[in-house]
Length: 184
Image (cartoon, rainbow, N blue to C red; front, side):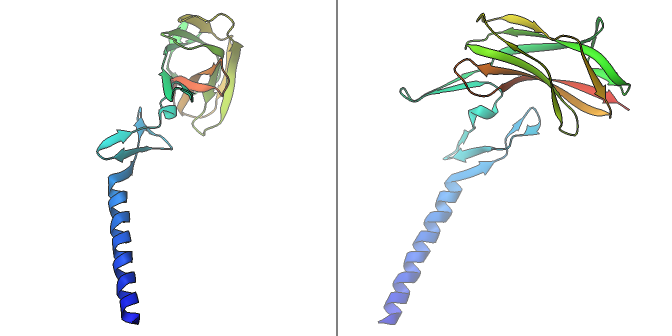
């Protein structure tokens, strides 16, 4: 009698193990690189199709529960960095530098309440350069920060990020980046 129970349990566990292995092979987690940087959540391949978490794609995402619709908007944001009247993207390690960020935004198809420009150093520390409320909703506009003095203490890549805050609430969302390469 015991050997029948053992045989049944062996068969049951064998079938379960095979099902789990099949389910694992049907759904596979994969690395997701956006502009060369690995995104934290990654993506999935399920039944031969790749699925990517849309919130990781540097755009404005809105989910409408009633219609089960995800709306993704990625406006065009072009940023130019000015020190005095000179455009720059690469500088020598000189310490403090006064500059401003000029941004041209177009193809904006969703309402926003605020924009923010910040800078992140190679060690990951971030500082806000400027935030501003958006009162007039337009599909294109320009935004220029006031002059900002920043201490480029070390060589490496500094990232200037342009963020938008959706008008219907939520957090700031990164929509564009510009790199400042600080040479030795």
